[in-house]
Length: 130
Length: 130
DNA sequence: ATATTTGCAAATAATTTGCAGTCGA
DNA sequence: TCGACTGCAAATTATTTGCAAATAT
Image 1 (cartoon, each protein chain N blue to C red):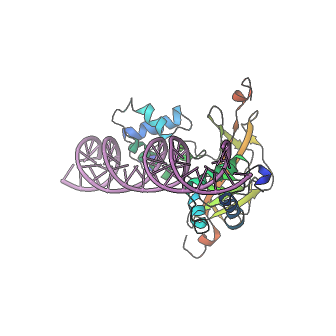
Image 2 (image 1 turned 30 degrees about the vertical axis):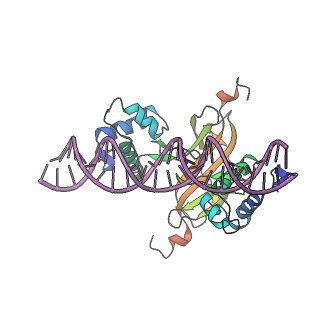
Image 3 (image 1 turned 180 degrees about the vertical axis):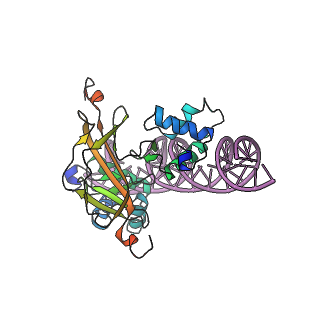
């Protein structure tokens, strides 16, 4: 996968991308680092940042920002939205039936769409008194 | 307006809200501060942050995050999207014809919707070789 | 051998916090 | 007077940067 995008598959890069794809939907840099430090004892956060930037530039990964805090990263670059629960902080994916035309952007060249909702997920809504 | 939301209309608060509504569509804290410091020489950024937080909690203002950098603030709390030009950095508003149902959020309670696009605006597209 | 990748530590920058001074009813 | 509001300075925190050491081809 990395080679297909002309990225040298170093140990760190392979593990980071693998983690993004297989184990975590939208981890933060912190989460990636904490998970992989046991597998790669010499790993640094700089390398996590470097690798993610590289992946983003090559279109393998997208960065998502839910609110003002740290960024999260998603190996699913298809067009979809994210929902973050205000209570449990979990991030869910969602989609729209069909692409919708934006009014007010006639003549604009759109390169990137970000959609995120906030609220309460069903688990936190039921049985918790909210 | 402030009194309608049970907010004491101090000089700083009135000026900040007025600036948001009348002069700037989506300013940053920095922009608000720089604009108002001449009118209110004692103004501090802390007060700008405090006032904006208050407005947000009362539903008068919404915070918007375009990418990873500083937050912007919008006194238009109606449901609309934001487009930020990658070249001139200007922020534009847009809307959808009609609200669309999200697939994958059945049973979720949605309290906040954020939509932002990035790309190139017509002005930057024409006559600049992009 | 040489270019790339990595990692530490310091720098940066937006936001938050603690707390003391000020203002207004 | 009393509580709310303000503002300075310090703290916090995610991210970036400079540069030297390690690594790979």
